[in-house]
Image (tube, rainbow, N blue to C red; front, side):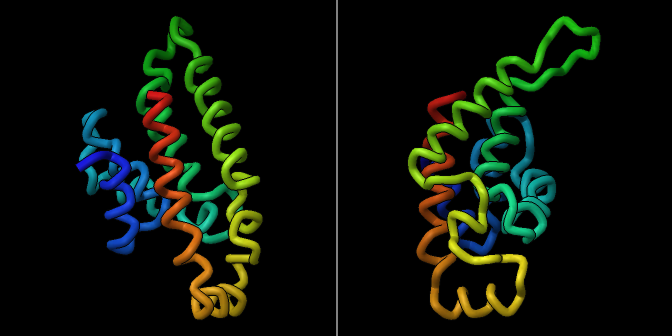
Length: 144
């Protein structure tokens, strides 16, 4: 199964956007998928269900960090590649969805429990979020 399919499957099983994206790529970097679920758990719903940066985006940023993140603190390795790829990811994601901010993409304030409940009843997240996960996985796959 492709990483994109793995991400979509994880999301369909109830994992949040960040968990779905990170877990699909985590074995490639020696990170157990269960640990990836834990690491990304608080990033769903726009970071702690606050409607800020989309979980699919933060999951992708974590993958980019696994690939390009600084691992030696002696100054011999910069964050340049990680930052460049995060900016490129953001540019491509914005081209597709107009924003990287959860509440802007969804069109409602996810942090308001009543508004969120109504949106769930209307099926708004169920219609939008699977595509966000898919697109994030596709974009990050091209960058790593």
